[in-house]
Every structure is written in C-alpha cells, then in structure tokens.
Image (cartoon, rainbow, N blue to C red; front, side, top):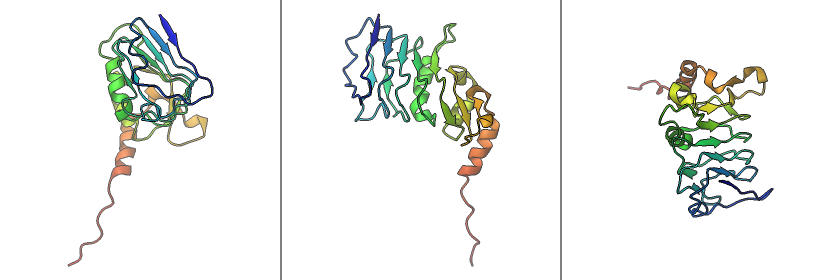
Length: 182
C-alpha cells in the first residue's frame, strides 16, 4: 500500500502519532513539502509503527535535519533525500539512521538516496568518508571543499578520507600556548 501526503507550498507540522496507525503502508511519500528542520519541535518527527520499504523526503526544501528526525526505518528500508539543499552530513543526524538501514548485506538497494545534493567536504562528513561499509549505502550526491567551481566536486564515494582527516586535524588542532614566562 502507498501513502502519499502533500501540502504544496506550505509549512508542515508532523504530529508524532500521524503515522502510527498505518500498518499496511510500504511506501510513505512526503515529497514536495516544506520539511526543513524535520525533527525539531516546530516541524515534528516521523515515527513509524511498522517498517516501510521507502520513505521519500525528496524535494522537501530540507537544509537541516535534526537528530531523531525519523524513527522506525529498518534493514529493508530506503530513505530518499534527493534534491534538498543540505550542505552537511553530520553523524549525529545520519549515523543511527544509516546503520539501521544497512544491518545486512541484502541484494536490494537499501540506504539513503542522496542524488542532486551538494554538500561540503568538511569534518561533518569525515565519519562517513572513513566508513567504507556505510558509504556504499549512500547513493548519489557530491561534495567539495566550499567551492562553486563544478570541477572541484566529487562523488561522495570518491572522497579521499585520509586527506579529509588531515584537513580536519589541522583545523581542530588548538593553537599552541604562548611563550612560557618565568
């Protein structure tokens, strides 16, 4: 069964009980809604009582997702986040979700569909760049170090994790203390 909710050009609030009674739904399509900051008290969370095959949040003007934005996706689920203006891929938002989608190496294509998204190759992405098991379950998407030049953009799977880690270490190294005074 397919469930499709759409409220064009409006701000949506998702009540925590909105999808609890939908036990026969295989695909939940929330495409085209304004769900920026999904997971926040202002927008709400998606809580599923039964695992769905597909949750689509494509074209939802999502720039930022909050930790815990969705609950109830499982090993055979896919999450579509295509065509959203997200710039970051932080572990506190995507880590648990991606790990729950990739429990087994099943032949079906499960994971996160991230096509037509362009994120910054920054320290928020390092956790995924280093985890070769998880990154193969993120489909599409590009990243670059804060550049508008399309030549600098690479596929998420092609990011050099070692180079990114060096850059993050250099950024996060505290300044040495000033000279010691006696």
